[in-house]
Amino acid sequence: MATISLTEVAGTLVHEKKYITIEELEKHNKPDDLWISIQGKVYNVTDWAKRHPGGDIPLLNMAGQDVTDAFIAFHPGTAWQYLDKLFTGYHLKDFQISEVSKDYRKLASQFAKAGLFEDKGHGVIYSLCFVSLMLLACVYGVLCSNSFWVHMLCGALLGFSWIQVAYMGHDSGHYQIMTSKGWNKFVGILIGNCVTGISIAWWKWTHNAHHIACNSLDYDPDLQHLPMMAVSSRLFNSLTSSFYGRKLTFDPLARFFVSYQHLSFYPIMCVARVNLYLQTLLLLFSKRKIPDRGLNIFGTLVFWTWFPLLVSCLPTWNERVCFVMVSFCVTAIQHVQFCLNHFAANVYVGPPKGTDWFEKQSGGTIDISCSPKMDWFFGGLQFQLEHHLFPRLPRSQLRKISPIVRELCKKHSLPYRSLSFYEANVTTIRTLRDAALQARGLLWEAVNTHG
Image: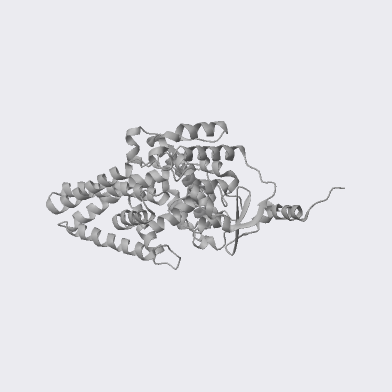
């Protein structure tokens, strides 16, 4: 008769895995009880969410789910070592991986081994030099010329420099463009808060939520523009914004504005920057916990010191107003581009799901096709799907991986939409017009009903 030693029994007990079902994991989806699964291992991130560098919104939006693909997308390989202390001891029962996810993870691993995430090129240096020259030319023209048209050209240069600075701020928010985290933070606040007046803290808060819940009407803040615009008639149901924690009311005023949004789209884009300034101030002076609040406020005050001073150097109020409007209108190019990447793509209602990460990103994005010579103009965001799938990838690498991503989408019968800048504008206006006509029908119905 065979005997089993106590050592063997103890070893068996120690190495015996504990399992929970997906249904049990889903119950841990609240701020005070927040669990997630990564590669089948379950982690308790309740306390970690409060100091998560990406904010608590991404974790709350995907609470109680397997988030492996999203984790791979946003975190470098060094992040895995910090998971052990959050491990609950449980594994996910019947854990399965879709074929799409398998291919996506394999691709991410190949890119990491090839060093693509670390190879940032010299784009940051070129951009800093380019922006510095434009800003110097702007200041020189305002101070040293009396010509109205020179001053307007300076306003255009300022607006264009803001566009390029925004691309650098976007890069610094997604990955480390400098040699250390401290310098990366410094550059983010310098080029974000100090130069553009738009807080890098505000950008991270909204942009991380956008990436996690790409094109969710109630979870993605980048699609929540009522009362001025609505990309889908489903917003007519006054959805509750999970991001802002309030109802997106589709009232008579919203119905009126939305009814003409395809006509007001470009004029709104010309003054969209005002909304970004307002959103920055609302966040920085809110009760919400904000990383580096003091630095962000200081950087914003720097902007609201030098910009009004520069404008005040112009000789007349007419020139001052025109200067500001020209700079804002030039930045409208970038605001329009942001809309082209998502407004006409697929939308959905509800929280993001960790099990269809690749599918949601491919469905919710539109690339802008352009010549390699124009990559600097679009700041890498013309490869919107590639960026959403691999947000840590430097923009200099996006064109290289584009054919690979296209083939992967083709393999799994997923959408890969790439339109010219003109075609993307037409498609976006058509989307806005379709929603506008539906809203207009409701508007006339309300008029006829109430006389």
